[in-house]
Length: 190
Image (cartoon, rainbow, N blue to C red; front, side, top):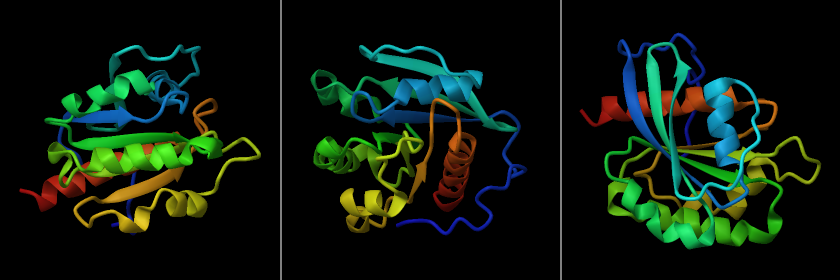
C-alpha cells in the first residue's frame, strides 16, 4: 500500500523524547547503502568500500527520533544472511541503484523475497532509489512498475523516494518519511 504523503514531511512531528527505532538497510551491492548511511550520520560524503558483513550506526533523522541502522552487505555471497537480521526491526530501507537496468529483475526478486520473511509482517518500507543525478536514472514511476509495487501486500506500507547520496539531495526527506512511517505503524499496532 503506497502512502498519501499529506503531512508526512512535517519536521516538527511529535516524537517521544529520544525515541528510538531499529532499521534494517538492505539492497544489492553497489546501490549506495553505506554512502547513504554515512551521509545521513555525518552530513558529508565519505569514501566507502563494499560492506563485508555489516555496519551499525545511529542517526538522528529529526528532533526526538534516533535510528539504529543496520547496513548489511549486498554482495550475492552475503544475501543468504539477510533474514537473520530482521527480528526486532521496525523499518526496512531498501536501497536500489536507479541506473542499474541490467539488474532490476534481480532487485525485484530480492526485494519481494525479503518481504516474505515472517519478521517483516507489517514492517514499513522505504525504498531509496539512489543516483537520481545521473542521466540514465529510472524515474519513480518506472521503478514502481519494474519493482512490481502494485503487487505488494497491503500489510506493508511503503514509499519510494529518489535521492542522490553523494550530495544528500532528497535524503533528509526520505529519512523523515521513514520516521513518520514508524510513528504511524506504532500508533496502528498498539
